[in-house]
Image 1 (cartoon, one colour):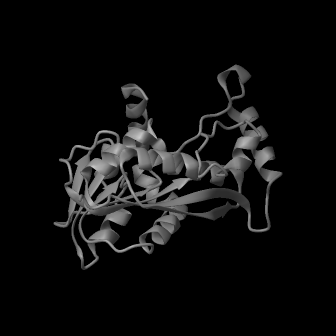
Image 2: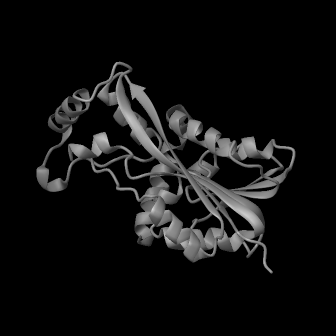
Length: 253
């Protein structure tokens, strides 16, 4: 991913920071599930911390001394609560500005999919985690947002599966790795609300390819019709296939 592309993503998330909490209910539910899967202690890196909801929750745990809240969007870091136990850090997961073996554990909720190279992201996380520490992460799986992707009116990124993450983690040096998958969904009253939610969390999808020349009302009408065709009793679904990752950096012999 080019520097300009990463800057574009960082700016997008910075613009979304003001309303991020309102639209991040699903990510919060995923984070809560992730945080119950293991114990943390010492210094914890929150990689891709956003507004810092999980950084705060982690910092309140008795066994955690400090949380390093890493994000590449200055606007997100500006929303971090002021706390002696939370250290904001502007940076990229693929080039973490920390020394080797400087954190006990790393936590990342729905951030690693933004990395250009999952292999490089895994190498960097392995590098900064102390031997004996672990990475806990949640990423969207390949079945995420399939309903939105099917009609090709929205550009939705594809996501890789467990095997690809397992290879990247093992190549980075992680030893024991465990994976779990679970479906999460939110429902919305209208297509406008669903699209607003996607934009509100910074993961704004572009409209159809430029050559289609579908803009404004015409494009929105087609998207709305496509989404309405998938309406469920609870509303219009926004559904994620979530992969939960637990990877350990083994103690050195």
